[in-house]
Image (cartoon, rainbow, N blue to C red; front, side):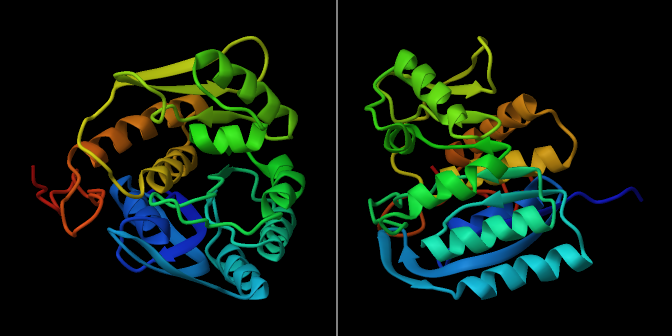
Length: 271
């Protein structure tokens, strides 16, 4: 048996299983990599929204990463919800100290229902401490606009924002365009120079689905750990997420829940 790709998620816990660490671990399993987690915060949430956020001590976050790296090893890492400045600093320290160079960063700012998931000032620390260590940043359109300080309304805005984000130190960025108007979801991948890669697919008109950003960044990390080139990892992750959305489950009173295990038949799905 060959070496099993090992992927670590550093993110918040979602007790209802649709987003955060739980979504990441399901994604890792579905894509055939060994998943591990370092929990940054515990959220109380369900399909209707986030009710509470309880932070974990920054040193505990660091110790989780340390324990995994020093024993099992890590081929790629996905970073999601980083609640406050001190957690960002500890994660950045761990990334540098343990040489975690395949870092996929999902700059989580708000939840699907609009609940803030980052304290004021933390984003600036993230730009300074973590962006220079990041292989790929995966913001959606609103997050990209927040990072760039501009309103992203179309493709040209996405291109300009992508250039600005690379100037912040990340090696590559994919801006997810599902929030833009129109019948197509256009994602923009950029790693410098004059070439932009556009990933285009028809939007799936199914309503609100939770955890899609978490799932996407986790899928990219999984494919990177399996040895795929970065742009191909992004393409494959987009295809995976499309099926997760298309086969999503109506489980509660709010948004639909992602069906990560559709490949295995683990969740039959509904209409």
